[in-house]
Image (tube, rainbow, N blue to C red; front, side):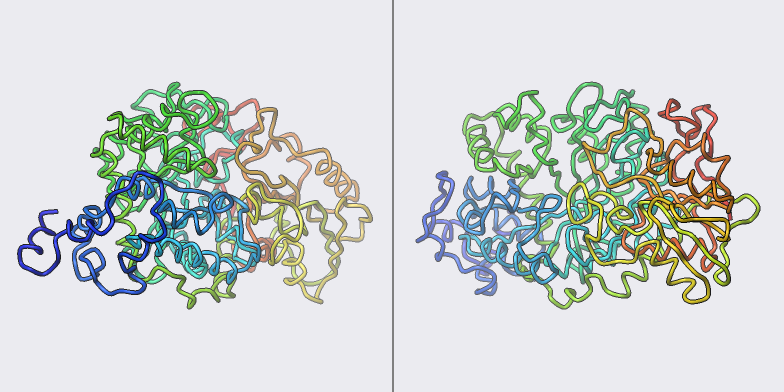
Length: 625
């Protein structure tokens, strides 16, 4: 503020009071329509006020803008609503700081251009507010721009962890940023930096690995997403999530309790977040989980003392989907939830549906003095700083020059490379791999051989994902056929029926079907289902060598079946470019992937992790070459 006053004293700008007198602060929740024309927006005026001048330092611009903001302006900036519950008119009336698309929440026309049009509609609504503050739009682009039909879907994080390649992760982040930018979106709720310690957890595939070194090294994807600085070409703000300990819950229960000493929490779960902060990550999302019984969404020590003060995080903290509602243990958003979360250090609150109630409750808490104006100002300052750094005040609308990059050939080629680098050869008796590309007949079976949805997993087009041809891509079966061409015969049967001894090899592509958080937990066991076991048994009965390709979001319980397989490959959840799996099966690319997780001998060993003294089937780091 001192810098602004200096400018005023020099006669370079009008004092803040002159501007705010035109529209006195209001606590009614929305300005009347007549007030909206008072201050020209950045889209129609050039540097009418200091905060609109890109030549001024960001702190000066933030201070000037905040001097002109009413309480309701500030509360709006702290609020994030879901697009299905907030219209463009709502954005203008309530001065909402952010809108998000939840998993599967897409515009009526789910194309890159359809997303860009939707984004611009919301952004124009934000620019129509009295102060013309642009919104920041968030989306879970966790393995590509995965809500958009036609986008490139990269391997989920567990596969990227198997590559052990931070440079590859950074290049993937850059490609994702271009596709996200081409739809207007400027904020990505990724990467997940959880350290998954129990494979029964349904979000295991969102982890780069079970030890903190792997997720910490792969924070290179933050640099890929954001670029060398926010506001550069195709710069998308990244989010380190879910802070902190979500991968360490007892029993692998989603949104459960991480029962650890502070020393162990710091040793295992904190390092990836410290690495992301060092890389300048713009936002941090809080975990649904608890630490020793206390909800992290209300944990001031972890959020303010450790993250902001100790680690020096200068961005803003966002809650997860209705995450603050769980603080008091009663369904719905309460005054106690609101003041506890905000006072703990959450700066923007994701309240997808009941965002109006949140604004009302927070206003009442501020008026009553239970949330200080200083805490509100700190939150708003953090949010606005990132908006200025992103360049949203200068270039608020979609950069359509990147729209054609969505699903581009270059990005699919990069994804294919990532898939190949992620393959882990677990077993290869008799050198059955690599398969010959010429001669004889190859039999392919299994429910995951010819299914884009299954090989992409959760968080693909919809939140939980689904089976079938849900988006363009190359299935593993198509990759095999592309590789051999007319030089060999490829026969496919989902259940293995029709095979006989005339085939030189059988490839069974089996494993999991899509799931995401809440529905993905498997406390009852991690084995293959009956259909997979029957398929493999049918293939084995033919007497031909059997190669099993496991499409899954975590290690599976296969120890009892493994002796009957000639070869086994962990393909993880490769995404849309199944050609990368075939590249390794046929030796076009040598296998270099190594396990990011310890592979159990039995489900009863869970949790099993490197260094815990338990004897695994395959140790973390295993991978045949």
